[in-house]
Length: 245
Image 1 (tube, one colour):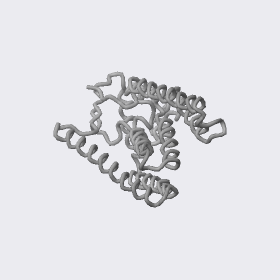
Image 2 (tube, helix red, strand yellow):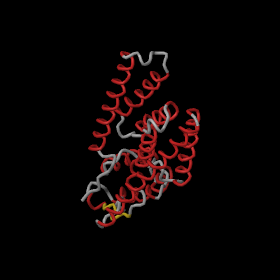
Image 3 (tube, one colour):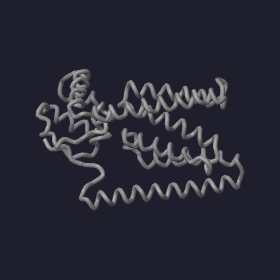
Image 4 (tube, rainbow, N blue to C red):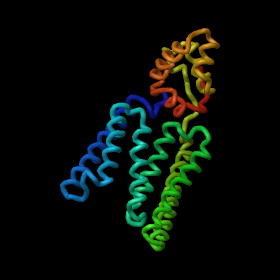
């Protein structure tokens, strides 16, 4: 059975639908804001929405580049956290977690994961410090609410992981059976193995006596065959997998 990639055409359609829904929601909120006179073209929220819409439309055109959606969720996470007391609006935390989840699925946390996660935590608490402007009492209440949210999310992930373990499954399959792809040549499979070892295209080209452009063109075909978008999507999906050739 072929592995279903997070960057397959089916998933790209889902990402595009999510982006369209996000564009509609942001537009509706912006229009309502003008009608209700909650803000004008001089209000910062208007420019935040416009900025977010730009990235949403880009993600509609290029659905596989889900990091653009991460940009949108990150913008709103920071904006909400700075603007509203956390104990009255905890959406900022959920948006920030969603940002990290998107980047994780795209493969940006595959290397130096500990340092990137640490940087993400430090950044969040740096922005969270702005909650002090709402008063010390509000800050303390917000901090306890943040701790409660974090604990619940941790438990959700823990029980989900334990459920998969009890079902005899791993959260991430670690086996790529290339025999299921007869359209791939022996050289294609060798190149896949080299890519998994993070070998540069230029090194592969020199090793096989071809141009780097030839390697890139063939790898695009290979990625398409494996139903992934590009090298980043390939490594995010199959990094660390064992090959069966």
